[in-house]
Image (tube, rainbow, N blue to C red; front, side, top):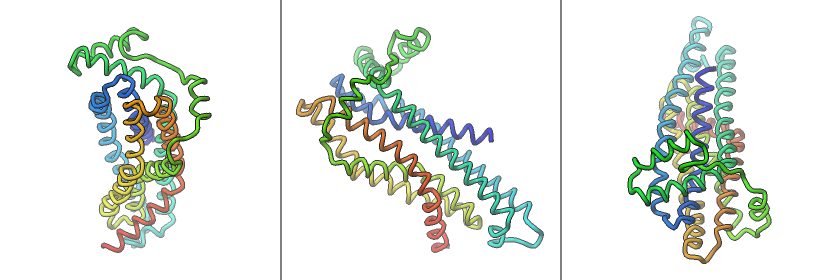
Length: 290
């Protein structure tokens, strides 16, 4: 359970950073350095990428342990595809199901924390962009970050709570983009959340070709990327450009980013619904090609 708890925390951290991806555009518009904001966020995203490289192997080893333990406890003479029909293996699958759903709950937790921390991130990241403009070096910005940690309120990092007035403005203002964008974003984020987890579970359902099942999960991940690139990001980019040119207000960009974050949250919850169906589809596809 300690390993699963660690993966839960990694998943929460990854989704916390993912919630900030779109907030970086608001910082870029606010400071007038949109390209710098996108480039600097890449430094922040490196931490999430590193956490992501740890997440998959840790989960894969957990699945291997579940399959190995269940196989070792099956009655003598039962082997191959027959193992999955035994009571011992079904119990092991149920335990694995609970563990993977717990990891998905980490995605929800990280997204909630990200939404609450959005005002702090936008202000702090705006300060980081300005500091980079003064120093011209990412490495010279790090001491300022360290100063903020040692002496809260100084340096770059500024903690801010969500302002009730801003929330009222966001919710009361009429939406300027199609509401379907947020539905597409929810669907994209739910697929992105389950793609590796469903692949691992499909491998447990079909252990003879579990490596193939895990690799099949890339279909789900790539589908999520296509939805985001085709249906969501262009709309956000259009609003960002309009704000940068003065044709839309900053409040409109805040509104879109806030509702996209809520759609992310809804996507992590919807992932609990589609987790097993997606794993079932991956299992069927794996059987078709093996």
